[in-house]
Image 1 (cartoon, rainbow, N blue to C red):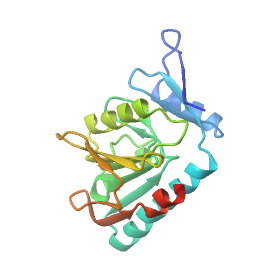
Image 2 (cartoon, rainbow, N blue to C red):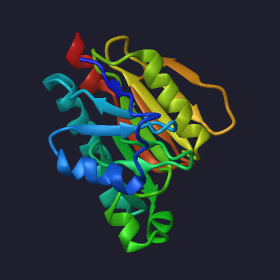
Image 3 (cartoon, rainbow, N blue to C red):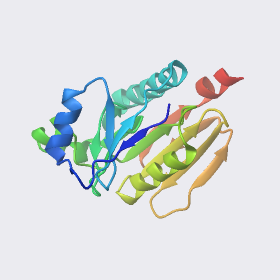
Length: 195
């Protein structure tokens, strides 16, 4: 199942507070909102992708517990980007100093901040073009590093500020000392599962 855009414009434009209330009133549905304020119903993942997402989050949490450099977020966290899009990457990480600069109220709602790092894991039902557009949106809104992982083709697209997208076919690991100091993601748990 793919994501669905619900056309509310020009009849209604949800305010940030109304979007939050819609999400709270429908906790069983995952919503995003693009910069045009269109409401997006995000399809749930299948078991395979959900398992991969859990493994990825565990790797980031374990690294972050050892280094205590920031805060790790899972796919249920919705961030309000500077262009007012509301997005929920599969994994996100924010440096501790940037997170601490937010008010407690902002931290408890949908944080109005672009993460330092985002990861999107392409599921079989996802559109590659849509995922790539989302990755470009993240970078255009201040995300410093993004990884788009396609388990099916075993390719990774790396997005960085001010640089062209880097395509890595069959990488064994991913790392970035600038944004994620000392972190190394072993992709064998995802890629080898598809052999």
